[in-house]
Image 1 (cartoon, helix red, strand yellow):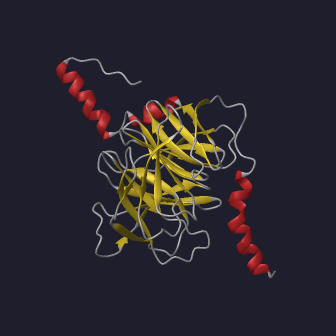
Image 2 (cartoon, one colour):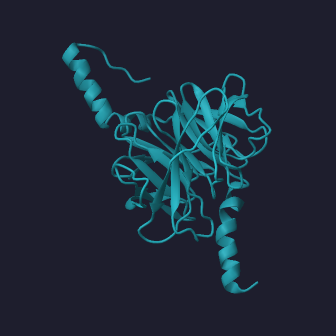
Image 3 (cartoon, helix red, strand yellow):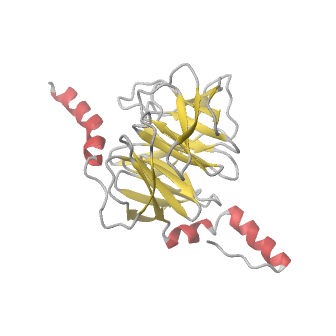
Length: 292
């Protein structure tokens, strides 16, 4: 193998080598459920929708997402579509009963564009024909495993997976299906980000790697805090669930864990427009405002 090919292979393999022995066994975590569906073998994205957990397999699967009841771990619905995606890597909330599916994986950085699809989810199986929205980077192909949606504006952000650092790209405020949608770089991210989620008020974003979590303020994308995550074989999913986070990992019958948010997360989100509005409303009406 030549030096150039060896270097390219190392870049592709390094994230997986880093994930093989990641996390800390000392971090407290509560097991929530274990995926019971034998078809869920590479949980690579995680979203909570209407009390149900939605996940998607990593690259190589057909076009489908799984809806799981967290009380049992059993799949209660599958949404399928065609044609098959290239490399699905993440999910993001998309309003009531829907998720955004991120077909954004590109380990070898050869794709001219990537895409996102908005698909319905819920109990029961369904086959759909979702609209695909093409996204184009301003500076060449990138590999990305994280997609987030701002809870107030609905704007999508793609977070790339660089070895030492990544970038955050904003999609247009309104996506067009009839033409490519240009992405704009708006911030920096840690290296090896495998998934992310906004805090409920939109004032902060939690990005996970195989072994750690990083809280960034929005819209500055400046880092506020970081902490070690529990050990997982190859952790690639994170979702907001109440006052905590759900974490998933690749592997058959893998376990989903729940960890608390750090105090900095609450402080960061209290500076968001949503919480600012709530505080003024509470003051105007003489009501107490607490954050759980």
